[in-house]
Amino acid sequence: MSGPKRIVVEYEDGTRLEAPFGTLSGRVQAELSSLGAGEAAGTAKNFVLLEWKDGWKEVAAVDGRAVELLRFYTLERVEEEGRLSLEVADDYPELLVIKRLPRRIEHILFVGRDALQAYAPEEKVTVKEGGKVEHVFYDKKRPGFKMEDASATSTRFAAVLGSLSEELQKKGLRASAVAALGEDERRRLYGELARGLGLRANRQQGDVYEFLQLALSKLDT
Amino acid sequence: MAIELKWIGFDFGQCMMDPTGLRNFLVVGDVSKEIGEPELIEERIYKYRQLKERYGSFSAVKEGHRDEIMSYVFDGKEAAREIFSAKEQEHLLMGNGLEEALRYLKDEGIHLAVVAELKKTLGAMGADIVTRFLATKNLTHYFEELVTPQGRIDLRDGSIDLAYKGKTKEEGTLYDELVLALRKRGIEPREGAMVGDKPATDIIPAKKRGFITIQYTGYVDSVPHEADYRISDFLKLKELIRKKV
Image 1 (cartoon, rainbow over the protein chains, first blue to last red):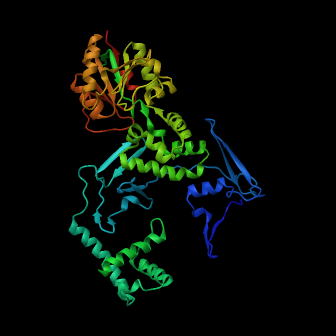
Image 2 (image 1 turned 30 degrees about the horizontal axis):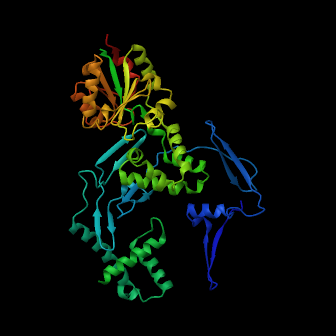
C-alpha cells in the first residue's frame, strides 16, 4: 500500500525536519488526509469491504499487491489495563493508560516542579459491573485511600536523587556540569543515566530525559 | 411462597437497561466513522475517558454533562449529537429475562411503572433516554407510567404530572409522593414492590416507606444487602410474584 510514509517540514532557512507520518496525531493525519495527503496519486489500492449482520459496513484500503484473504479469526482474552488519572488545574484530568502488569505497581511518585507526592497503591475496593471488574488501588474521592506522608515521600524521592548522584559520580560528573554539555552529548548522557537507573519511558523517550533534567535541577540545589 | 402485589416499580439504569454493550470503541468509534472521521477515534475515546475521570462514571457524564460530550469529545460537531444517542440506544441491552417477566406481570394484571433518576427535563415521549429505550426495545406497552424527579409521565397518553418535580429516590421524597399517589388508587405500599440495583436509591428508601424491595444483581451486585429479595435474572419474578386480588 502506498500511503504517506514521512512528513517533511521545510523552513525558510532551508532546514528540513522529517518524521514518520504515523507519529502524527490522528487529528493531524485526518486534516492532511482531507487535503489529499492520505493517498498518493495514481497508486492502485485494493480494498476490503466488511459487512456486519446488523447492516454496518466498513471499507479498508489494503496493499495494492494483496491477492486474497489469508486468515480471519478473533481473539478472546481477558486483558487488564491500568488507568491512572491526574487532577489538572483548570482543565480535564490527564489520563495515563498502563498496559504493563498494572496490578503489580508498588509505588507511584508524583514529581512536579513544586510538588512531590508518593502513593503506595493498595486494592481496597472492587466494583463489578456486567463483565467488567474495577480494582481500585487509589481514589482521592473515596474514604480509606491516602497518599503517603511527607516524610515517606521525601525518602522516596531522595532515593531516586541518591541513585542519580551515584550514577553521575561513576562518570566523574557534577549535576551542575551537565547543563554545560552540548545537546548531543547531553542526550547521550541522559540515555546512559537512564540505563544506569533502570528508567524507561512509558509513552515517549523524551519524557525520561525531561525527568532527568528536573531531577538534576533538584540535585543541584 | 409467592408475594402478592398490585404495583411494581422498576429502576432503569443498570437494571432494566444493561449497559454491557456500551463499549467506547463501539459508540465513540461508530459515531466517528459515521461522521467520516475514523482517524479521530483514539483521541475521542481518550477525551471521553477524561470526562469519566472528572465526573466519576460514564453514567454521571451522560446524565449531567451530555453537552460536554458533544463540545469536548466531538468538537461541537452537531451531526454527532443525534448519531451518538442512536448508537447508545443501539448498543444498550435489556436486563436478563426482562421482557418475558414483564409480559407475565402484565398478564397477571399488575400495574407496572419505571421509577428512574432522570436528570433531563421531561419532554415529548422519546426525547429522554428512558422513553427512547422503551420505544426502541418495544417495551412501552408494558408500563403505565414513568416516575422521575422531573415529573411523572403517563406512558399511555404522554401527559406529564409535575407533582414529583424536584423529589428524588435517594432522599426518599419521590417514594413519599408515590405512596400518596398509590393510596389514591387503593394500593398500599406493602402491595407494591420496587425492583432496582442500588441500595441507596432503590432499596433502602423504598423499604423504609413500606414497599417490598427486590435487588437486581444481574449487572451490579452492590452491598449492603438490605433488600427483601435478590434476583440476578428477571425471570425469577415469575416464581416470586402473583397478582394480589
